[in-house]
Every structure is written in C-alpha cells, then in structure tokens.
Length: 455
Image (cartoon, rainbow, N blue to C red):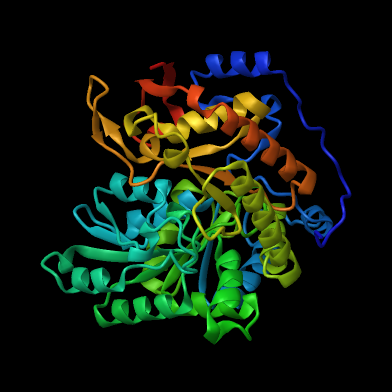
C-alpha cells in the first residue's frame, strides 16, 4: 500500500471522445498543447507534477522571503550539503537553468561533453554553448527485452577510448544521468559510476551528475547491486554524490516539489563564475529565482525522497502498471524502473514507419481512447526529415513514456490506464501515422504541428 493517506483532493476532468478529437485538432496533434482540464490522467511527465506532503506545505508557510540572506536558504544549503558534500550550492528555478549556468561557465565553443545519455534540455544547452554532446550508452541498453538491471551505465570502454583519443583535449565534461532517462529510466550501478569517476580523475576531466532522480537510482542499486544491498538508499545517494565534482539537479523530480533545483560544486573558482551568471540571470545567490517557501519545501522533499517505504511504493506502482501493460499485449523496455514505463510503440505498430512517428501515433491514440496524456521518445524527439518529409535520421527505438507523478495517482487510476491500453491494442491496425507540418529549429517535439497520415 502507499505509505501515506490522502488529505487534499482535486477533481479529475472527464471528457468525451468527441471533445478529445476536437482538442487534438485544435493543438495540431501535439499533446504538449492540450489544456490540463482536457486530460483525465496526465502521464506526460513526472517533473513538478507530484503531490507535496503536509510537512512540506507546513514548511512553506514558514518560508523566509528576504531578498538576501534568507534563513530558508541556509536551511536549504545545509540539507543539500549534508546529502551531497558539495561546499558550494546555488539554487535555481529548475534543472535546465543549472545546465545553462554550468555550461556557460565551463564550455567554450568547440568543446565536447560525454554522457551515458544526455536528456533533451541537457543536449540543447550543450549545443547552445556551441559544443557537441556525445552519448556513450552501455551495450546492454540496446536489448530492450533483457532483464539486465543496469542498462543506464556508461560504456566504460568507449569512455576510456574517447578520453585517450584524438579529440581528448576537446572533452570538457562528463555528465552521468541518474537514472538514465534517455535510456528508458534505467539505473546506473555504483560500480560503473566509481569506474567513471576514476577515469575522469585520471584524465583531469570533471564529472557531474544529472541527479534529477538520484533517490530512485539509489533504490534500484540497493535492490540489484550485491555490494550495496545492506546500504540504505540515502547511504547510496551520499556515496554517489561524493564520487562526482558536482551535480545538476532538477528538484521537480526527486525533490518532490513543483519548481526549483540547484547546482552543486566543489571547485571554488568555478562556483564563483557560476555565481556571477546566477546573479545576472536567476537572482541573488540566496534565492536563485525561487521563493523562500520553495527552498524550505525542497529541503524537506530531499529528506522524504530517500525513505525506503516511499521508494518501495514507487516501485510497486511501476511494477503494477508494467504487469497491466504486458497483459494488454504491449511490450515495454525491461526491466521497469520507478519514474516511468516506456512502451515499445515500434513493435506494436509495425505498419507505421519511423518517419511517420509510431510513438507519437500511439500517444495520440491513448489520449483519444481514454484521455491519457503521455509523450513520444522516438523519431519525433530524435529523428529528422528533409523538406519533403522523407526520412534523414531515425531514432534507435520508437517509444512512448508513461511518466508516474509522485504521490499523485493510486491503483484505480493505474487500472484505468491498463483498460485504455487494452482498448488501444484492439484497434491498433487502424492507428494512423503522422507528419510534421511546422516545427521549430530546436527541441521540436515541444512545439511541432502535425497531422495524421492515412495509408
């Protein structure tokens, strides 16, 4: 059972199929454009969509809104330091702000960043700095059906080759994403992280964690890595942070808050450069674009998130939805993680080619069938076409992510998702593909306009 009881409720919108058809046409078949009151169960993202605890709301009421020197900041700083060991902690309004500040300070144009997998905003901020983002996922990540527990690992062989290769002087940073959202939310083992840290020290390249889901990664480590089975999630998380030179954190995930994040740093000179950018673009260093109440809520969320009963409930919810999805006849990326399930849309819809976006087609159909909002992670997200719509590049896999907001939906909601998945499978042959009719030059999946393509 969930280790909490419901104290405040919010009505869920229920719409008709005709209303959903009209809504999809209005937003040009881009689910990001839907109004929240047009969505019955919103699994678009787990970022900033969780439910705060009574203790967090209480802490927020006591927040100090002083512009400089807020006591809320010093409480936040103490909690982050105890967790991460980083002496310099800069609050920001969310994770992508931490990315922008760090990369602006650390990445001159022409440099390279390496990662187990950069997520979308991370890659975009690297490219906006005039640099190149290179992914080095481990070979096991390529087998979507295997039960290998640490598919989020970086490929240590390729990492070592890159650090010793002809472009070694251009490598400015290694980013390890915990869990690896770009590789279906799969965790990184502590052994892999320790070996990565050793290679980075050997070659004097800083190692940073994209720590948005650090607690969920730590939980999975305690469940599957023999050397860590007697450790608590908190102990694993502390050890992970201590292996790195700093971190980028979106607290909207494992801070269990609606807004906020931070940049953690060991190096004083780098921290000073980042602080100047913070003041110019986010706010004074003791608030960083956040209200004092947000800082207090983050501090408490970072404490609550490593509680084993909470993490067990997250794992149980994801496991329950995984069983329903398999029973409906949809393959998922195995094994299921905690923050999301990733549906194998390419396998379910073989009649839709990659440049007609089977993942996006499945996501639209889930909305039409039952008002469920999800997101494609396939060729709309990673691919490209020429001016005539012919494919140029395709994603390695055509996936749909069902993200699970924290402490928000119960088992009956997940059962409803299972029913909609089963209904969708029954009519899968009739699901159309899509084509892009208008798109922005960067992060196109957020704002593209599409239309269905029959035949």
